Length: 302
View (tube, rainbow, N blue to C red):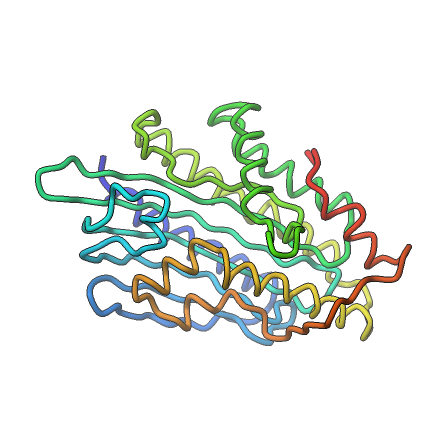
């Protein structure tokens, strides 16, 4: 077991995803390399005010530290005080067109070491889709791509487990509603010793490699749809839910901030235009209401 094979794959994945997104948008991503005081650093790739993406980022990071942050030890208290090494690729894309969904993907690897003890490693990751206006064919396409990524690495049962985990994880408890239509989520894969390194890395790679084919066909299908102020206004309102989740619940955001990561890179996930309203509800029977009534209900989309 060694992270030596993981880091080059993550770096290459970032490069390949950015190349495809640049070709799709037509505008280059900004490149921002950074170092972290205390160990490690990363490469942030960001696009703002593109032809298609209003804002987006594809981040690679590889950091080390003397003690695991609280966000990591909250559900793994036995690792408190251990030296850690964390690496991953994380992306969030916010299209300008409200008919095109926001999307998130993350793949990561952690190692925790302590004197006189065996190192502990695990993988995590997944991807999820956050539409503002629901299209059944888009949601089914995304979930089918997610399913295809998992089936070779555990079959139908493993896909169901990761799909249902995603539905639970991306849920705003204080709103009692899902953030979006779900996808895949997993964490601590390998930490219990029941999954070997190659198997855990294999699943993680499959999820990362599936992202482009899961998302870009949806963006291509919707990019030309005309929209107006009503649609942009609703998009900004729903983006508020995205902000709330990332700042209150998201493990990656909390880990990055608590571990002394680069704030600009961590918070690139936040959308550029957001609105909040007091006790707002969509008009019954409207396209906005359909998002709540149909799409924000966990179900079998594959």
